[in-house]
Image 1: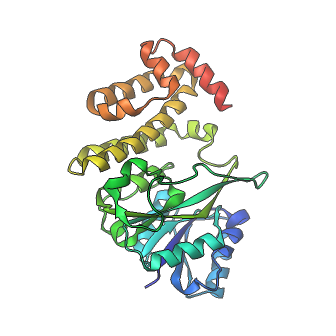
Image 2: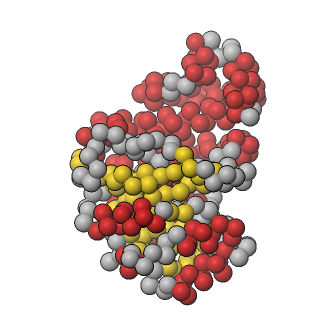
Length: 327
């Protein structure tokens, strides 16, 4: 069995794909690594770049070509095809630090925790400058130690770049990630939580997350264009939360925080439209307050606070301030 399956969602990333795939070419760990290049209907030279690595390292790289279905569909396909003990996603325009990946795989060889976290860098596409989003992805837990997830759930900083799941768990989850939809990384973080019992953390920086590209889905202009897709993910998370009531209180709290983060992003999208999305924001507020009060109370963004205390009468002013900050 391979120690780690890395799924590389690939759609028209010929500019970056060589750097991504080359970062996995580490002689010491090639036998422990499975790299699934999931070609999501690319129309550029991405499939040819992927095939080059398959030809060079056939025991490590595999190219899987499918019809375009979006980021979630590539992860679903990767889970279906994965043969490694652990599972990680590295997008085709990102890459890994080789020393960090070596240390991660060596750790995973002897570990059986359901979830393993590593640190990561943001890297400016324009300047190449690195920065840390957080100093520690789970402060307070001893590095390298397997502990109960519930014992540290309130300290975990969930981001897709930090996560390696035990593959067996992902294959057992009945809920599949939404396809033909952006922003499904929140589903990838949320859906396994009811099944996670143990966690371990390493200090190493493994993932290099490229930021500052105008085509990225997280730019405010792209989020405005795909507002309905972000809404779709928020509603899916809420539905999942509602049906998974038999989890521990600690997991429930962790799920609430993930959803609150996603809802806060949805509010920012609404506010970036000026007045036209007021009713959508108010409707979501009423839904949370009536059916998901614990999530409603977790949303403490200053803009939302001003809206609530003013009975939403300050919407235009708050929207203007948010748009100024976002731009």
